[in-house]
Image (tube, rainbow, N blue to C red; front, side, top):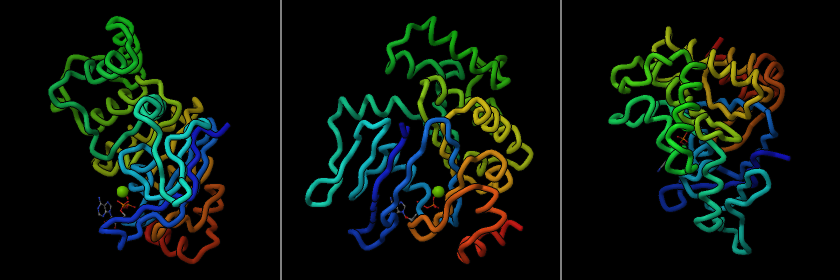
Length: 254
Ligand code: ADP
Ligand code: MG
């Protein structure tokens, strides 16, 4: 069973004059790690935003473990499932942004326990136990009572990852998780994601870290101009691309 299925997604902005996603299809199997690479403006964030229900697709289908979040009607327009169904689907994925997006007025611990208590109906005790185990795993157990502003960018991002994991998602999405970090802090985030990959967490990661994508991903997707230009085995796509556009993009990282 595929954890995520995206079929024929189209998305445009500015009264349909700017076509940002042009018929993108993508499936992600359980335990698979997919890296999405591509130039700025190619539609990577828009694709993640459509997949995570932050942006509505114009047309296309979106399914999580076979359950529809949206499907295309006869007029070729995406029709979304009802509120109840979307709520259920939202609890199946986690999303980690470039800019951490922690709740600034909550302690680290409360950042991790709030949604499990409010959304999943966990007891405070249960949520805190799970949160402490996750902070331990991230090497941040001693920061439980700190506030986000008291942490480094790398620490904040690890809290953001722990917060996403606290919801026990079936799939995690990352949108350039290291782009806002100083180079010396990038490694600590990549290490955490690498560890999650070893534990077979299903993940979709938009990244400019090519050597990381090559080492950790099961599949790499190269996007440009709102289409998937090329995809496949990371070693093939990154070290031996078939398409000229992919070669040109990768030459910037050589
Ligand atoms: P990437 O993440 O690959 O850099 P984005 O998905 O952020 O690309 O953006 C793709 C294109 O869509 C860009 O031209 C961007 O300006 C445009 N775009 C993204 N979001 C919006 C929006 N809300 N309104 C108008 N244009 C947008
Ligand atoms: Mg982006």
